[in-house]
Amino acid sequence: MDPVIPLDLQRMFLGEDPPLFLLEILLRIAIIWPWTMLLLRWIGGRSISQLSLIEFLLVIALGSAVGDSLFYPEVPLFHAMLVIFVIIAIDKAIDHAIRRVQIAKRIFDGRPVEVMTNGVMRVSLMGARQIGSLELMELLRLKGVRNLGSVHRAYMEPSGQLSVFAADPPLTGLPIMPPVEAHDPDRAQVGARCCLNCGRLGDLAADCPNCGADNWAMVAVPAPKLG
Image (cartoon, rainbow, N blue to C red; front, side, top):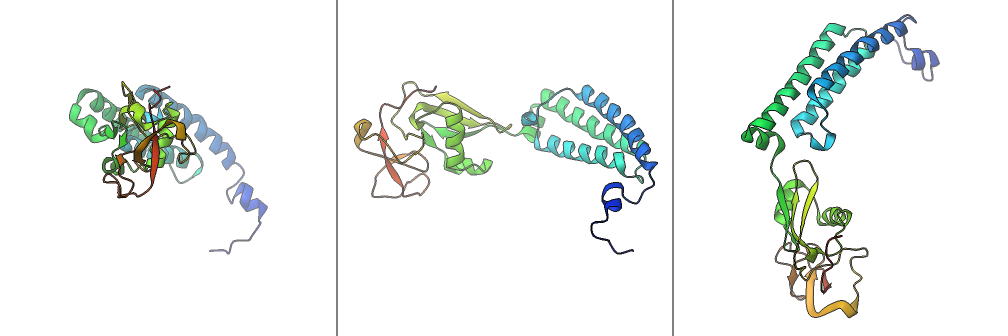
């Protein structure tokens, strides 16, 4: 094998294939692109946020099959078209099973995970979705939540979205508007503390029984409602 010549512009921009191969690339694009678009119209338009893990892997495989067939001369077009068809057919079958079979939906999509109950984060269940308390606070703020006591239940959906149900009436809870540590002393309930990590009410002198953290803050009452 010949040694690589650094900064060889011919190799960098045109490679070692003959110039006519550029026309072949255009022909490959003219065949593979419409074929792929036709099959994608067949499966419909699910957004990325709705894809299950297996479907996401199929999308990666589809991207590889389409991309490789466009400029690798050793990849026959018929082989690439067959691979693209089979991948999309598998995705179509999975989508059909998810809509009609409850067990298949659980297998491919999973179930919602309850990450908050009555203003307190469920740290043990949050680990199943690999989400930390700071990330959850950010998602809650994006939903208009200013205080954990405003939340009755919160669920992390299989799609990665967060579903929030308001507490009525709001409970005493941890304000999460930055900076989290800074609370209005005029609105703080004397003697009430809550964990800065999960929002559970507790004793300042002990570790949090819910998450084991030892950072406490004064809580605000009443907690603002959801925006």
